[in-house]
Amino acid sequence: MRRIGFILFTVAVMLVLVKLGLWQMSRAEEKEALNTVLERRSEQVYYSLASLPDEPLWYGLTVHGRFDHSKAVLLDNQLYRGQPGYHLLYPFAVDDGWLLVNLGWIAAPVYREQVPVLPEHHGELRISGVIAPPSLLIELAAEPLGESWPLRVQNIHLDQLSRQMELPLQPWILQIDPDHAVALQQTWIPVVMGPQKHYAYALQWFLLAVAVSGLAFWWLKRSRI
Image (cartoon, rainbow, N blue to C red; front, side, top):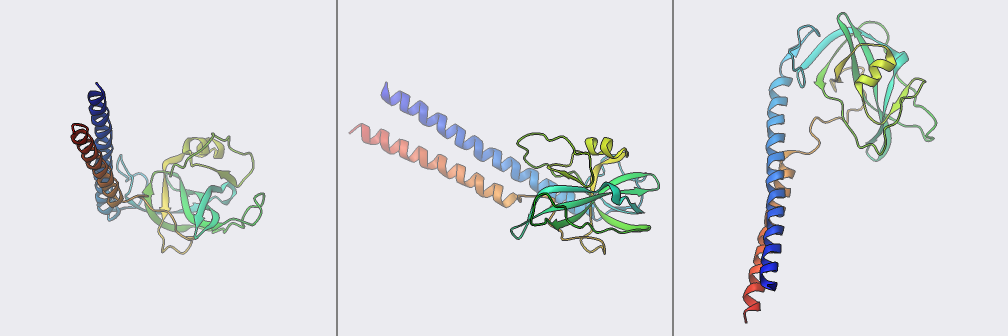
């Protein structure tokens, strides 16, 4: 009875380890597919909101318009070389709508209650970048939006921001071209973890499964002596 229980336990552990390895393999394949889409779509540039396809994510976009500096958004908890800061986002008005533009990273002041001095860029500008979904960070608890600008937020919830700004924002973010004149320090990356790491994690799970099976075989063989 003891041997049967041990065998069943070993099989259950191995199944879990193999399942974790297969899950990491599937995540790696998803990341590879995403990288392929990124490379292909980023090479194609659109020049108006009306011309965008139904699924515009990861395409390039170049538009003319004006920033609204009165409704700045500061995405909190952004580190750069160990220094805390924010991602600065401004709404941008074009002929056929509004979009939220991520200009990049800006350092936070020493004291939490202070707000950094925000750059402003007046007049009509030509901006270009990549259309991307808003980055979703871990939130311990949902926080209501503040009443004063700039807004300091833990996540970019575009539906909430659209209501707060009273602007019909697009359901995506424009990540500005790093070489653009108004771009700040760029720390945004489209894929946080590449497929190689997922493959490495999958290998670890599979090796653990092999180790467990080897130890179980050794114990079963030894217990017969």
